[in-house]
Length: 98
Image 1: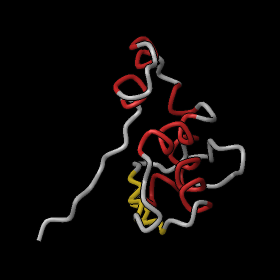
Image 2: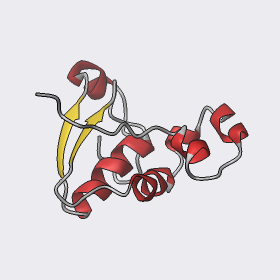
Image 3: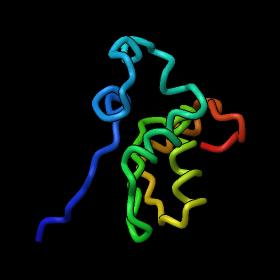
Image 4: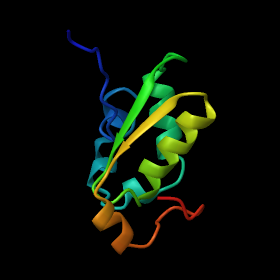
């Protein structure tokens, strides 16, 4: 059967978080700390929700921050990424995680 899902996107900051649409013009927004936690709060996930984190490289701050925050909140995480690309680029998160 169908599995109900909710996609989290940086655009949610504008659609549901009240941010000015100009934030979407910032190409570095996905590398800024604090963005993932705001998205998590806007989504209001249930404790039993699984997080499927999909990223080409898995190195930008927001993607790592979201996985770490969701894990800290007790969620299970499934990460999908290109290992070839991930291994070829340096970590972008202060923790050094990818």
